[in-house]
Length: 123
Image 1 (cartoon, helix red, strand yellow):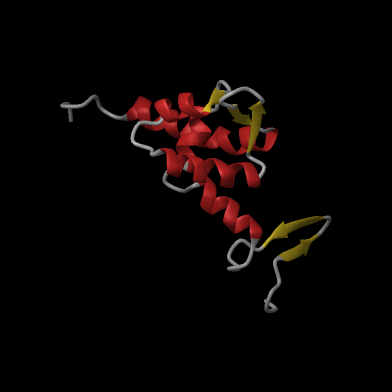
Image 2: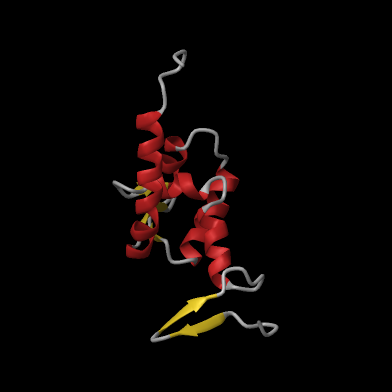
């Protein structure tokens, strides 16, 4: 592969070379599969949430990490952000169409794990 090449042509469609270190698709995969990215996408799967509602739904995440994760997912086009001009501003987040597509298999994985695991204390 040529240095700096990020796209390959295969027939009529173009695909990113996700194994290339400079590939923008690789960054999106990293953001989605990050420690908190998965939880943000799963939390937003059924409803739009304000920042503090989202933080409350994801136990253990700090405000700083939630803000960083949301910033990356918004930049990647997976999550939308709406600011209401109130004092203080109210910020609501939801999944874009792309975010719903990416989140669907994550939700399926989450559901499979939680349905198949033995209850605590049972083996």
